[in-house]
Length: 293
Ligand SMILES: *[C@@H]1O[C@H](CO)[C@@H](O)[C@H](O)[C@H]1NC(C)=O
Image 1 (tube, rainbow, N blue to C red):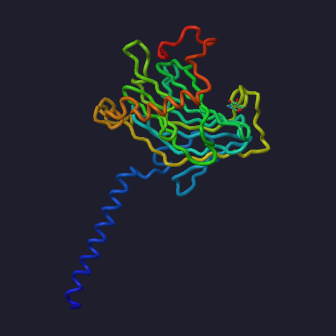
Image 2 (cartoon, protein in one colour; image 1 turned 180 degrees about the horizontal axis):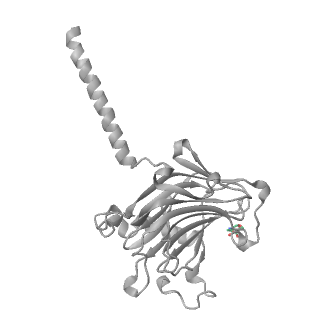
Image 3 (cartoon, rainbow, N blue to C red; image 1 turned 60 degrees about the vertical axis):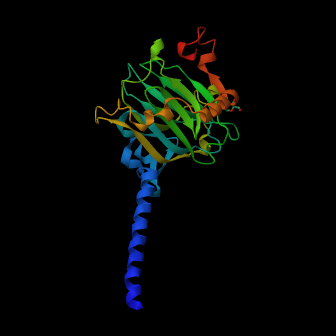
């Protein structure tokens, strides 16, 4: 009996190992690439204020009276989707700004897609400001008050950018859509690759209640946390045919416009959480900007 059991035990072990391998391969394909900070990013401002934690899969950004800090992607990208999980400064964060954005780094004809998290006094809501620069023109600010405390836990912030639209997401919820309306003569970022950036800095001359609330340095140092860095897009330099390839998943049917579920949650944000929209700021724009119509 023992001689019969021996090969079957071996085959059990082999099949077990095969299953483990398959499971591992499956997990990696589901979760995408392992994402350490240094794989895709580098520190661009104040090394001493960015600390890698959890084996480099997460980072801590520090703001104190000496300095803020910043980091950037090593590559630039032309279309794609970038997302990360961020946990903002808790408690009294008034006067601080945490930004997560894409930028073409070409000042005269700048393209830029911005998330800016404006801190607030304890118990007062954070404000998320978004802005879109296309072919050098910005001044398209919108502001949303979040429906949760973004300092209590990590939440996912995503910029989707393809040939037809730019969408800013908070978790799965679209908070802003900038459509490609080139047919109506409205500029759309399409020609220049953009890098991915983040900074944490002091901006108490404007950030909180228009600059009325100052930073309370007795609460410093201030900490923000980032993890789950995920960039999927066409790196530049890279294969020149990538950006125009309609087979890229971010150009696919599901990303050409909001899904019905997304459209519903977008309407909910517009109705309940938008606190400022340049489109309806008549003092600033007596004539409604064309992309708002
Ligand atoms: C801060 O809180 C005040 C009071 O609730 C609110 O008016 C403001 O929009 C909040 N955000 C900023 C960035 O000032």
